[in-house]
Image 1 (cartoon, helix red, strand yellow):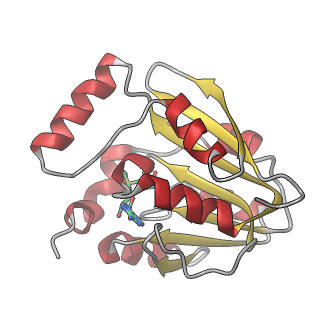
Image 2 (image 1 turned 180 degrees about the vertical axis):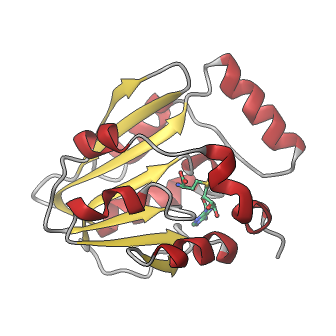
Length: 191
Ligand SMILES: C[S@@+](CC[C@H](N)C(=O)[O-])C[C@H]1O[C@@H](n2cnc3c(N)ncnc32)[C@H](O)[C@@H]1O
């Protein structure tokens, strides 16, 4: 099946540029001895910068092209996943990260259910997502629609409500002129 990210993979990191690991490290409350899942983690662009601060790290993605780039980094474990149906046991990860990927997940409600399921009690999920209320993001959304990428951008508060429906305590922790950072915690009693 045609996957836009298989095509984009060779140039992806040159186009997108480096991440801001300081903010993510703070929001994820790193370091941790536990494992981090970077869901929709692509080439491992972000995950590789966080590797020194976690006990173990999996980059999960559906695109083989993106995962091939992640494999070249050697410090991360690339795993082919569909985020709507994760191949991991309940409560596996103490941290989960989703950067610029939620709007690409074709069933975001099922993805939220799965992320909540594999997050350990007292674990932390951070979602960085373009804020669709910003004009620049609306233009990106239009471009992705014209490219038939099938993206669906949800407002940050809608994402929080979706995570809450799966038992997580979620809030918008930070915003800038393009993105919002949503932080969700799983109560120690489970979902
Ligand atoms: C814009 S890229 C972001 C990659 C990475 N998080 C980063 O910031 O560099 C979105 C990624 O989500 C992945 N993706 C889209 N839908 C997915 C799904 N249903 N399950 C797993 N990965 C998915 C794509 O293959 C792509 O690598």
